[in-house]
Image 1: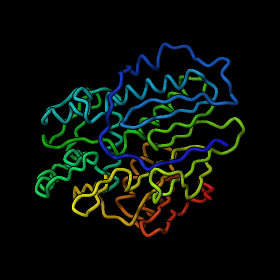
Image 2 (image 1 turned 45 degrees about the vertical axis):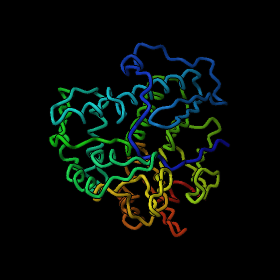
Image 3 (image 1 turned 180 degrees about the horizontal axis):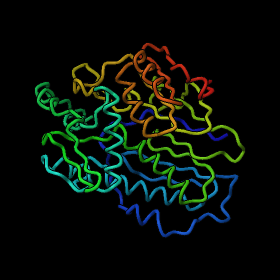
Image 4 (image 1 turned 120 degrees about the vertical axis):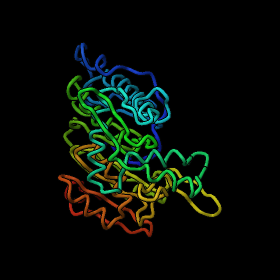
Length: 345
């Protein structure tokens, strides 16, 4: 059986802006490929984007993986926090002036802003004012004074979007966007749209650095299987269980994926927007299942910050959504519909 492991995802700015392919060109004017493609065995492909390896396993269309890779390059060129030409970097550098952006950037920011509003301070895409002060690769911790100075500029309400003009403005000139907590989920959903609308694919597994999106059906009609890794075995192959689902997206967030130690203190990469510091939580990892990968991505971060008790209640407020928490003390917590939706064992 095909099985994929869901790994805790890296929450830093999007990096590695690859070759840019205009989406309009990518999605239009092309004949539907895939005649003669094997329906029984998947065609695989991969690319590096969003600071991670993205892999694709597609049934029914031999050409689809290359098209998915091109689409990833397009989105990476828009959302990369560290590419001076990306839409996000240009918005951050505009010092409060309106910035002309791609329609895809407007679409993502509209969705992300809505999730910020729902999260009530637990998820905020203007965390960039603080997150850019930290460096979890080099082990750099900003001073408390620097965090305190930046924290007032973390407020999603300053994001102004003109859908018709395709402009974005940060009313606070010192605010900064960082879409690391939602962009890969959004891209995964768009890739599924591409498979549905522009290819002959019948089923696919898309993995964007641990964001798993499941498209269509397996040829044998069986559920898709995804292993949830043990957060106590970082980088290893140990799984705590396997989900069996018919579709949707699974996203895992964990506190150990990017860490460093300084003066005897361990810091991890998921920051609390309310404090600018690594979140204080009882959770070691949380896996979210949702029909939408965008929702699963944003919720995995939000529920991690919320903690297992509040987080499980928040998951239950979303239709066809469930969460599985592995706690730092070794225990587990499941939201009400986890077993029902995942057949987890």
